[in-house]
Image 1 (cartoon, rainbow, N blue to C red):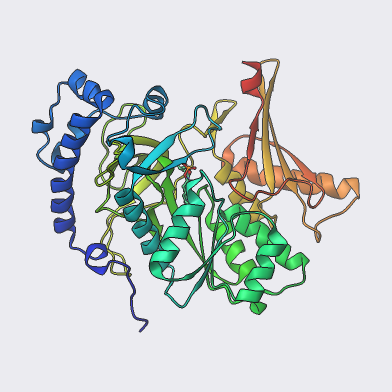
Image 2 (image 1 turned 45 degrees about the vertical axis):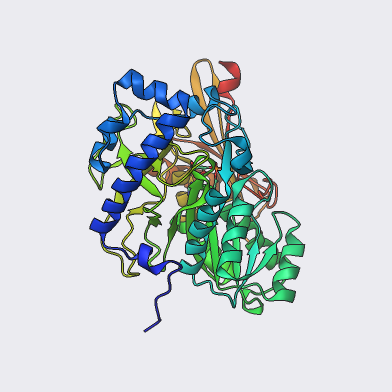
Length: 437
Ligand code: DLL
């Protein structure tokens, strides 16, 4: 039997009752810390008529007000800071594509705990100090690069701070230095796999054994494609800038959901419409309370990510609750002709029909009717310039999509390599309707 490995065994395998006790103790302290140091959240609590004395443990969590991205925007940049700036050592930020940037602050302790979370993910993917860990997430304000970099150091891997891009150079380093673990977005991993093939490098010529991929939604079908093209086991990792970055949760060898680091993050699932807390196993919006964060300690933060939590025992021995892959974000869901459409549904159909996940969804509106098109790249083997063949392939694909989505897209097959590749988070949707509104 393979020896089970953990980065912080005692915490990662702690009996559930003890985890809950620990969470209760931390929550009581954290609520006091926030109430005393963050006037913005104190006002929210006062308005709801809740005081720190009302919070005696996790059973009282529901009494606290939610915090949303709109609050973060309103309080930008310093309004949610809970420590004096001289105690902060780091800032990370989102790209700000959906509005004003989120700026997160860290004390040294915050950085330390965040890196521990990433180290747990690396060890769960089989990482040890013998490994060479190639970090191909973007470095800089984005949390992917620095988070996994810090985690890799903590595990003691030989860390390659590549950042994203320069794909042929990434592959050259993999070959020359014998990288064993690759960390990047799944769309970039797929692109690296494609480039390997073009360069005529077989995955057997590399030493890669595992990949730690996250920061964007990806399907099980895409996982299998990446595993095949890189010759690895591909692990999911989740997190958001607001909660430090990657490492809020991560997959173990079971690859069936991500263990949430429950000693640091208290998770709830709520109904996104009513805010009602839903029982375990229900699908809803994920809400996090950061139990240890000092500088930017969000309480009941609404992530907009839709998923399911499960406490089913895991064969890896970890006791921390698992979250499913996010099934899209409640604010990223497209409503086309009144039907809810998630890009992940389209991706699943594409892969099961033998296409690569190189696609773009374009939605527009003309004469009050939604126009829904999916541009899909043919790979070199599928490519043809015979119009009747292309039309027939488009029809087959559109029918397969209709079966899953319930509405009919217009599928346009495009030439190999004509859809721009992503080195970070892929842009899958172009919704032109917003431009007209
Ligand atoms: O994407 C942090 C991260 C970096 C996670 C590297 C994993 C690896 P943000 O840029 O703030 O932070 O984006 C956070 O990305 O609310 C989800 O919607 C999405 N997301 C993150 N991880 C996953 C994942 C980083 N594994 C937002 N699966 C989150 C699906 C993910 N979506």
